Image (cartoon, rainbow, N blue to C red):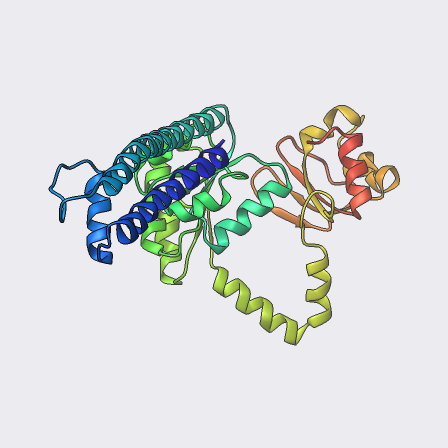
Length: 335
C-alpha cells in the first residue's frame, strides 16, 4: 500500500513540474517574455494570487493563460489530495503497526528484555531467535528500529525510564539483558529493573572492571565484560589453540547445530524408576554424554559419577552431536 501511495505521489510531483515547465515555455515563446518574467507569470497564474501581469497580454497569451489556469487547478487539486492521503495513510499504518507490536508484547510471559541493540544486543537477539526464545528489544535509535522492525519486537524509548520497562512487560519477564555501551546507563537500568521485578534474572554488560561490583550491588545476577572475554579468547588461541578451537566447535549456534544442552531434572522424573544418573542411561538411549550436573543450590559438579542422586530443581549438562541432542529432546519432550 505504501508503494502505491509513493507511485501516485511521484506522479503528482511530475505533473506539477510539467505544468510549471508548460507555463514558463508558453510565456517565454508566445509573449516573448524573459525567462524570469515567464517564470514569474507562471507562478502567479498557477497559484491564482491575483497579481498584475508583467505587461498586457494579447489574445493568444490570454487563451494560453486560461488553459494554464484550468490545467493547474486540476493538477494542484490532485497533488494535494495525493499528498494528504499519503501522509494520513502513513500515520495510520504506523499506529496500526505499533498497536500490533503492543498486542504481541502484552501476550508474552517469561520472555527476555534486551536493552540496547548495538553489537552485543544484536548478538544476543540472534542467539535467542535461534532458540525460539521470546524477547523484546528496547532501543531509542529510530533508524535502527526501522531497519529491523520486520523481524524483531521493538519498544522505542529510553531503557532508563520505568514506563519503558513496564511497556516491555518487565513484570512478566524472566530475564533482562542490558547491553548498552555506557556502564552508568546499565547501572540505572539494573536498579530500575530490580525494583520493578524482584525475581528477574538480570545480565549486564560492563566495560570497566570497577563497574562489576557496582552492577552486582545494584542487583545484576551476572556481569559480562565482552572486551575481557575477547582478549582472553585471543590469548588462549596462542597458548592452547587446539583446545580453544575444539571448544568453539561446541558453541551453541542454534537449535540445528547444538552440541550442548541444559536439561532440568523435572524433564526426566516421569521417565525413570530411580533417580540416579545411571538410571537415566542417556548414553545408550540417545548417544548423549552427561558432562556436568548443577545442584539446586547452584553448585557445579564436573563429570559427575553414575551413582549421583538427582534432585528436583537440579540440572544436567549433556554433550552430543546435533542429531543426538534432537533425539534427547524428542524422547523426553523437551522444548
